[in-house]
Image (cartoon, rainbow, N blue to C red; front, side, top):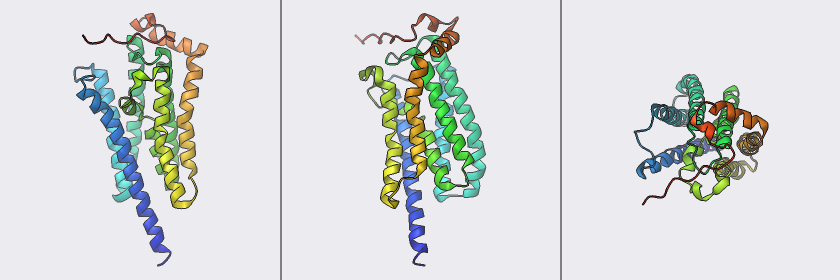
Length: 258
């Protein structure tokens, strides 16, 4: 009994930590969009693609929270069954993420603090990171220590759209995207710190997850400033208003309200 009790307490502590981490991640994403809506920067008058993308994104957040809750204090059988539905939803999320990125580039409406060509490359790199980490988590579903950490890292990799809306990106100039990625790395760092306090060592899943998220920055920059990036931008925007927007020049900021 003396050995069972500490193990049970450790499992309960693990469950509480991962549930709290999931709530903080979800709150970060949701609060960013709510803040922009409250400030009038977003509205329900957006084009249908934006709404579908938003539903896919928020649907993932809801599934993510539900799955963590089921895994940490609910029905594991339901968690496993719902997991395959969530895997399908992840595919929808990726498709919609790519669709909205292409749409923004073609319209020439990239936010003024992003280089259009970098925006077009960086978003798909983020989705690729999400796919890699999610796939790894699914493949390692029988190894719960890896499974739950990789799934958290996968969702952390796409926290940028919500987190970016909470940060003063217009004041961060050319480093806006990089700063969002580096701030998002605070989540896996918190997981590492917690592991270290609990067991005296950091689980490798956090290291791999954080490394994958970090790689988004150099990979997207290398591709965006290469002939491949030039070709991708020219091909995607050809025949659209975005073709008239220089890919490696910052768009002008919106006019100040009078």
